Length: 544
Ligand code: TEU
Ligand code: CA
Image 1: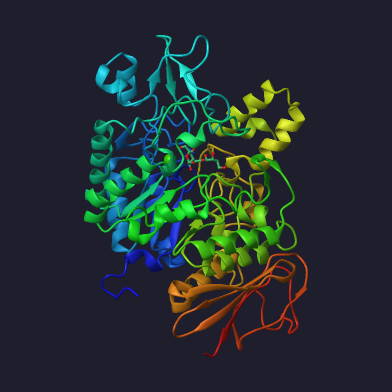
Image 2: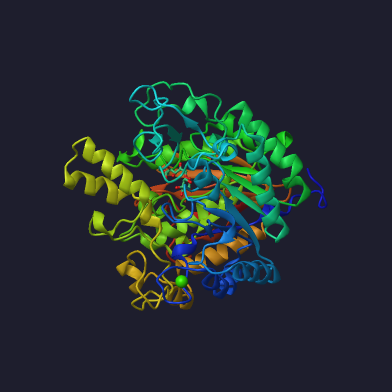
């Protein structure tokens, strides 16, 4: 057990992700911005948020909404100025809220100065990226991109450059010490400004071992050459020892396609790499290999996956939604009759697991997927590229429409619903992406006034978690999972809690353990003694 002085500050933190474009627009141009975030800091404080993870606000041509950075040391003017950013950091600090920034270092934008110079033929900057000659009429290797299509694009000069995402996102060459120097300078620049750490975008794919052909894979060919490579671990260890450990940072890595043993290597405390990692297995519980093709969601599968990861990792980054995923009530809950109960249940689940809980903007009011009418309403580059690939494969329009609307990342990117007005309190202008019609009843203003709202449930659950040694640092043990009810304990030296999650829309009888119900998403007069109601979430304390 770590003593109070050596204990890491973030071990009991609640982290809230802001996708700035969709959070709050202060000047009516339809795009969320930093002054908008500042205006909501008190709201976040009251919710119980300790740390904000800010999705990218750097200069960017926005082909991937900021995940394509053209200058890491400037703020995108759509979002405000460097002065606004400094104000955000200092105002947040005054309220006791820390900020971690998104660090996207697998690739830059093709509009970054480095890449532009490289294209002009500058020798130094060509080594910042992967430029290679093609093989006859074909690209240098057979790798495919995360966003569909080939991972190589031909330049005007006839050679190719590598991009694991869109062609507007050329991959950096991490074999080059100059890249290391540039990026670590960027890290220091922001840490010196007072940010408290980073969320490292696709960190486990940055180091390409070789550029050889990959084994053919229906979704992603080439990955065995860059996933979790030894070189990647070495890089992260250097970041840690040379920079992060000098500041008291919290570093969470987005690690794609990881298995529990790989995630352990990236985040085990003793290895001094990352503090925590995001894994994806639970997001893919209902996908058939690729996320665009779905199968029926089965809660028992979700339970199995969560349990496996709870056992595997000391301190996982827990989340049920983010800016790349559909909304969690659509994914794992219910958007009809049990919308409210299921949103509360998911809150309870996310905040009861061992690890560090992440809440994505709008999740705390039970926001739902976008109510897009057609592909016309979709803005995301991933959806755009996948649509193009599906066209090439001769998918009919109606099929493409169905598959993409169901899974597009834009589902989580509709503006936060602050009130029921036309612009949802998000903007006074025309929003960059369609606002959901259910802002009429799913919004912060009305939920603030309603004691039994999802928003108030979040506040109570966050407060409860903060006061519970068992939830913050206790052990985890699965007790049982009969008929899609997830039952586990969290236990510290002082208390043992039994957590019950009925992940179904039906009554479920279960064996009850423990002594006293101390938390529930149903009122005492609605509860039953012998079974759990639909989507009931219950915490029972036991005298030990
Ligand atoms: O995401 C990485 C990633 O793998 C996802 O884009 C994935 O392809 C899909 O959306 C989830 O099923 C990160 C960022 O979170 C994402 O927003 C960026 O587009 C991407 O990296 C490139 O920077
Ligand atoms: Ca704005």
